[in-house]
Every structure is written in structure tokens, then in C-alpha cells.
Length: 434
Image (cartoon, rainbow, N blue to C red):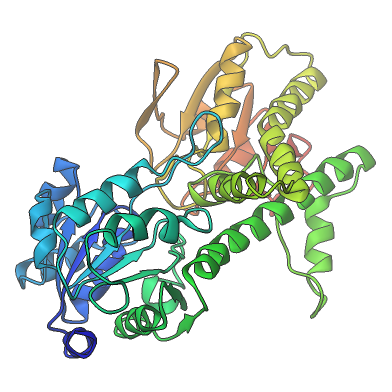
């Protein structure tokens, strides 16, 4: 059984199924298909199923040409028919893991995926969870679902965890370039997962267990959120001291050891960094342990949108203008530059607060044509000399590469730059920094 599956993987005759075709699942499916595997994507979203089967990509990091080529070659197809999971030799789960309103983990998508797999399970299958979750999920949720029907894990079926490391918008590091961590329920499970990912990724790092692999992902993002929280606090202090935090960071990062630059901003967003540390904090509480650094960093980071609004108010006050009734133009609403993802974007909290304070809010984002916030529909306006000069304050939330910063700097009455996007325009008294 083991050698048979390993042979199928190495000669690329293994059928690979990927559940969930979002920012993680679709790039992974494309890489396996490009490597010569027959890949079947599973998704409940009929629009996604239709788009991919037509050869179109809805993920900016995945060119439609790549999707069209592998769909045309028959290497990739997408369906919502879960019964086809029985035909797969390898099944990889890439479903969302959001937070509930109580900030507790919501693993309902993982549970549903596990149930779908269990209903179509057969001997000889390798099941890998990639969705970010708390340490213990694979053993406590996936294993009982799949190991309770008489099939022995490590002999009849194989289960592992491998954390996704996708960085949307990163032009240097794509799925195939990022080292992969794998941890199996048994040593054999780990070995098979390593063999699988080695077909498309240059470096695969095995760890001792699924719990270790799960913890790796949470450490990576907790490291980021804590350091961002630290630099955000330093930014608040620098403002009080009338010191340029960006100058300080740029000087500090010249040290070739002992320092890694992180940058302040209007808040954190996206699925990973704003969500994953909560998974770790929640799990820690089940052990009677308080993650004080994580919770403090989250408190600082979540306060940044309110600080942005306070800076807008201060800037308007300096021009003897009230926030109420003022025209505020938000530039960039996605959670990071050069992507269209708005999940947990700090712009939403900023815009919501401005509307509550009765400011007149408009926005421009070349990657987001419209969105809805608290029942109010907003449409992106053109970034023109007129739209900039007619605004009382322009607020740069997301520093997309394609934005015309010269136009903003030369025509704005007041600019709050939360990303240091206007660093080239020193001496402009109308520009205030975070």
C-alpha cells in the first residue's frame, strides 16, 4: 500500500484532489498540474467552478493563461461533486479557518471537508490539511473522522499537516519557491507527504508531528504580529517625540545582525496575521496559559485605525476644519499593496469610524471597484487632480505600486500618509505621517 502510493506520486500518476480553491488551493492546484499530475479541484462556489473550467483565474497571483493551458490539457478540472474524492490518491484540504465573533476558532469548513472525505474514503489515500489552525486539530479532528472506520493510519490511510505559506502579491516567492514544512501522524505519513511536495517544491522540511507542523505556522504569524505591534507602538511614541519613525527604521536596518525591519501602518489585515495568533491564544487558554505578548500586540494593532482617525482630526484642526462634513478621500482599501483582498483590512475600520463621525467619505482603489460596509455601498472614484484637490484630506491606507503619488502630493490640501508612500516629497507641509 505504502510503496504503491509512493510510486504513483513519483511517477506522477497519482490523482490529486484539492478541497478549496482560494488563495492557497488554486496556486497549489496549478503547480501540481504543471508538474504533470492530474488534479481535481473541489469547491462549493459554482462561480469558481465555472471560471476555472473555462480557463479563467480569479487569483491575481495565478495567470489565466496558466489555468487555461492546464485545463485545456486535461490536467486540471474543478467540480462540486464530492463523490469524486473516492477517486483521489491524495486529498489536500485548503479551506478557510475564520474567527467567530467571540474571537474563537471556526473550524466548521475543516469539519465539513473531513466529513466529505470520510464519506468517500478508501484504502491507499493520503490526506493533508493545509488550512491554518490550532495545534492538535489534525489529531483531534481529522484523525477521529478518518480513523474510526477500521482503516489503520500509517498502513491503510495516511494523514499529515503542512502549513500553507502563501504571500499574496509577492512577486519573488511563489508556491514553488517557498520551503514546505510537513508533519504526519506517523513517520510513514510524514515521509509520503515529503515525497509528494518534493515533486513541486525545492525544499521540504519534515518535523516530528502534526502538532509541530501546526505550531510552525502560528509561530510565523505570531512573530509578525508581535513585531508589528512593537513598531506600531514605537510609531506612536515617535509622533509624541516629534521624531520620524521611518528614518529611525531605515537607519536601524543598516545593522547587519540583530535587527529585522518591520513597519508601522494603519492596522493589520488579511486572513493570516489578523486571525492566526487568536488560534494560538485560544488553544493556550485550554492549558491555563495566558499569551500576554500576543494579546498586547493585538490590542495595539487593533487600535491603529482609531489612531489614524485621530491623526485626520488633528490635521483638519490645524487647518481650522472640523471632521464633520469634511470630504475625506481614502486611497487604497485592500489589506496590503498590489492585491485585491479586503479581508480584515484596516481601511474598513477607518472608513466606518469616519462615517460614524459624519465625514463625507470617498475612496479610490484600482483593484477594488466597489464594496459594501454596514449596508452602505461605495464605489471607487477616479484619482484625478480634481478629486484630490476637492478633498479636505487624502488618506493613504494602502500603497499600491500603480498609484500616482506625485498627483496626490502636488494637489492635496492635506495628506495623511500611513505607509510612507510620499517619502520622495520631503518638505511638503501638507503631508503628515502616521
